[in-house]
Length: 173
Image (cartoon, rainbow, N blue to C red):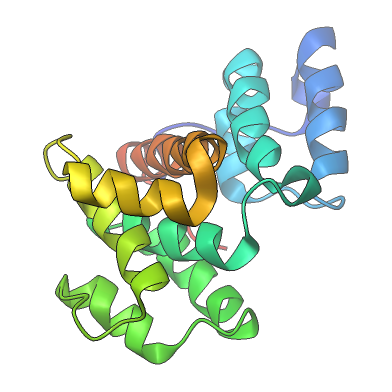
């Protein structure tokens, strides 16, 4: 049972309804249980949604790289909620089964260098916060400094929603 209610638009104040409408547009007209539960604090939803949208705009971060980093953080945080949502997405995007196995095992040695560095970067960042210079240099060569910033935003988005979903016991759809 969730620890917070799933709020509908009619239960929100004026500011909350405005944010609800904006988020609904960016999500193709669909709200998840997680989105509805986060509306206990509409300004937080607004901020978190901006973290989700910005790396996706105008190809700022390659979709496949973004999805690999998303899967890596979801696994690291033991997110059953979003992991099950992302598995079919990753298959549609062409993420190789070997990448999923490497994320689960932590062994990236058999992956292509671009796949491995994204997983290694995520694991190092969220496994103590210390990213090796060689990993940082490799990821910058792959996606640039701006790409690294967008990847951090993407990871921060998933860290936030996973923490919220786990703590608040949000039901999967």
